[in-house]
Length: 420
Image 1 (cartoon, rainbow, N blue to C red):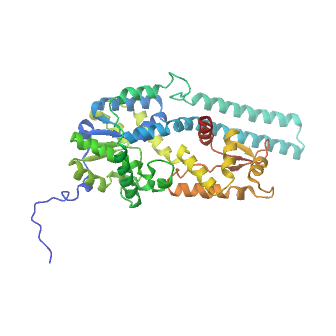
Image 2 (image 1 turned 90 degrees about the horizontal axis):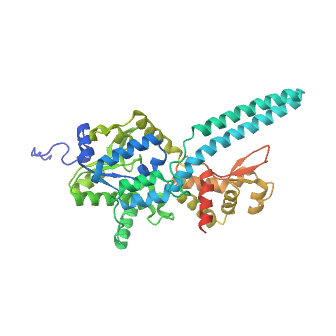
Image 3 (image 1 turned 30 degrees about the vertical axis):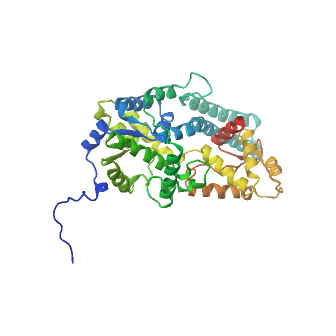
């Protein structure tokens, strides 16, 4: 027998997470809610061009005292900041290295062609000169169009982004939880990750990482933001560049809103409304705060969002890779460290000597353990899907067979050695 409804409820009363706020409500949230930004929003300031940084920081400044940063967000910012800065330099180095590789290949091909066809040396040299001039022009153009690093950590007084963040966020960063509270939050975060409860369950692979919070990082951000919004008795607007489904209610490529479970949890805990925005959505709604934002800034933020899929190795990712290699007693960990000492390349002879490999070992077989562990780390969400596998073979007419590690890994390991 079907019970009759008494007519006292609407379609959203028992299902608040399925309601999609109209545009004016989102604009009102930007004007009145507690605005919390994720670590990736702060870190992406280093990936934007200068005018985009100006627009985003200006918008956040207009939010005023409603802007707030959870303690865990600040922890993650400091943990990853230098790696992000290194990644900017690595991108330029990588494109120049690719061009240099193509230059050498073209030079070798011209030499072989001239030798096989008995072309005069003068003709060969003229063609090689044209190729060299072309690559020189390309390198000059790339360097001239590469923006300078927004911060120079090695130069005191040359960190303008950090200076602006310090001024913007003074008095707006949450205090560190006491030890017992932190342990309880981490335990709950790990439980939720294992049970696939949002947010952050896609980070479940980090549970065996060297991070003190393991897989609970996103939950720590969430719990601290919810607690602050409840304390202020206000709605919560969370701005994040994380586009994974453990934060978002998504349908195909569309972002419909926060995860339904998060909306319902916040309504139960704080009695208020939860909103989620990506940085690009925030800039598009800047007029709600009477702030003008350049169209180019919106495009720049969208560009960075799209490029996140080709993210770099992080400090934690490198540590996890080496830990697994050391645990399996593989010599590849020491070979990677030696490659870093040599600037990113190690010749086949040196690598095989360190590892005790016979010269007949195929280079593709040699890197098998590294490829397997890298795939495992990608599968667990410890590193992005598109990071380059370390110790990939690199053939060079000038240097012979070598192995290469990503540039950001060189920087991370160099800093580790300097710290030791």
